[in-house]
Amino acid sequence: MMKKFILMVVAALATMLGTSAQTVEHSKFTDNWQIGVRGGVTAILHPGCNNYKDFGHTIQASTSLDLTKYITPVFGVGVSSTIGWENGSQPGDFQGRNWLNYVNVMANGKVNLNNLFAGYKGQPRPVEVVAVAGIGWNHGFIYAQDAEYYYFGTTAHTNDIITKLGAEVNVNLTDRLQLNVAPYIAYNFTGANGYYHANQPAFDSRNAWVGLEAGLTYKFKNSNGTHNFTLCPYKYTQAEVDRLNDQINDLRARKPEVVTKVETVEKIVTKTVNENNQFVVFFDKASTELTDNAKATLNEIAENSVVRVIGSASPDGNANFNTNLANERAQVVKNYLENRGIRVEDAHGIGTELGARVAIVIVK
Image 1 (cartoon, helix red, strand yellow):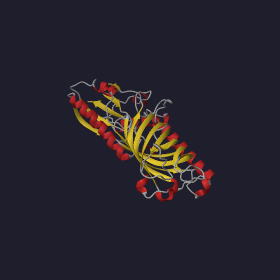
Image 2 (cartoon, rainbow, N blue to C red; image 1 turned 30 degrees about the horizontal axis):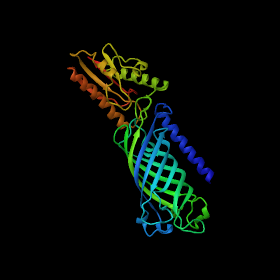
Image 3 (cartoon, rainbow, N blue to C red; image 1 turned 90 degrees about the vertical axis):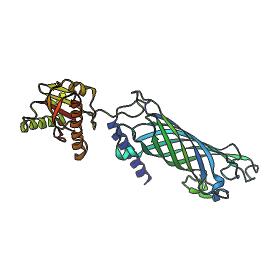
Image 4 (cartoon, rainbow, N blue to C red; image 1 turned 90 degrees about the horizontal axis):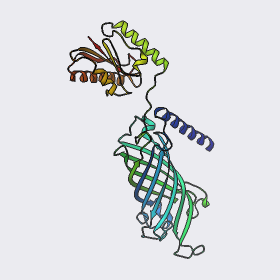
């Protein structure tokens, strides 16, 4: 059963890595690193099982340092270190009567749930939720209360494996700076308390503590000059090129008075073009913003011209989105031309009928 579970986890991770890798540009090992500093509080989940009077006596301050590299927009790995500080309220199984209660180092895996379920759009969302799981080494300072093993009232030292399950709520203040709030639960995985499990590894809430930390994360600049992943440019397949040619030819045959001549698809998908009375401009994926090349092409239209504008979208996305996108592109071109003093008789979108992210301007 455990073997099947591990295989399922590996397959899921492989799927996440493969899917994300297809949508973003290849990055170097030095790209997509970030470092975070946080502070907060922790408390024993079951104080009575650890020789404490109540929950309040176990509350202590904590400080964490976190280093993460995101391999894809979905999946990241990293290492973190946390210090638990003595609160001085009452000696117990997790109080060492020292400045420090524990120091740990953990390896972490992170999954950006927003990008996993909603896809990565090229820029981080204002608020993102990340699932975190980790395992590592913990050095504890324990107040000895058993004279058989230690002098009563001295500090004993323990070394155990710990695990951590939690989440990060990240607020992206800028491209490079995040505000983080991170709740979690950590288990002393091998250091069983009392008679529980006879020191066998176990997820036991009687040997667990909960924490809440907040802080800031800084994203280092990538080799491409950004602080985030960059989407791959859309590449047309030969089948898409052939389909686009067929659709353009069909449109020409049905509306000869509107579309008189269309540049070959190969040119449409690589640059803005114009020939005779027709100008074609190309948009980035899911964008309505005119590129510098598009503006340069539209600037070639004489100021006293009378034109018609046809907008189109690629087949990506749902029908309503593509229809609205095609109309918006036509309106953007219309507004740009009217600002130049050109009269636009008609501007409308035709959805995905052309099969490409273009706007066609026909000069009458």
